[in-house]
Structures are given as structure tokens and as C-alpha cells.
Length: 83
Image (cartoon, rainbow, N blue to C red; front, side, top):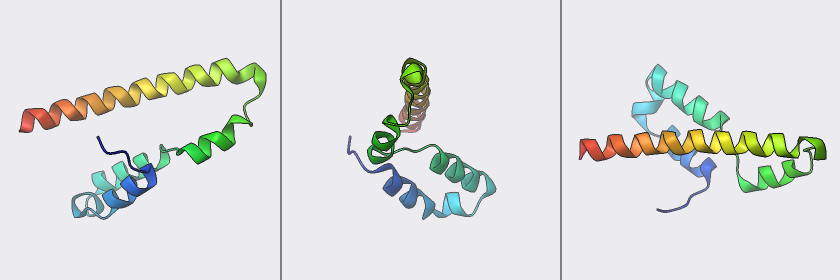
């Protein structure tokens, strides 16, 4: 797996006509763009989490990460079924 900056990935997807020229595609692009966070962003945010919220925010991040992992797994399964 090649690791790329999430902003670069979204930028590349935004150039795809199948996504750009359909309402559902544009909706997906907006959704993806609103849900990305790069390491520079979250490193800056670490200091903004009050100590008494650390565990709650960490649990939230784990749950979101698990949802994204499931999303990726379903996409992988769909791709395998198509090939």
C-alpha cells in the first residue's frame, strides 16, 4: 500500500469526472474532504484537548478509526468482487 497525504488523495479524486460531474460524486467529495485530518493538524490539536477529556477524545478517535477501517474493508471487498 502506498501512503499518500490525504489532501493529495482528495485533490486527485476531485479531478475525476465521474465524481465531479454527478451530484452523488460531489457529495462524496465534500464528505471525504470534511473528514480528513493530517498529522500536522492532529499534532496541533493535541494541546487543545483538556486533560479531563483525553480519554473521551481518544475513545472517540478509536471509534471513528474503526468505522473508517470497516468502510475501507467494504470497499476492498467490492473491488475484489468486481475483479
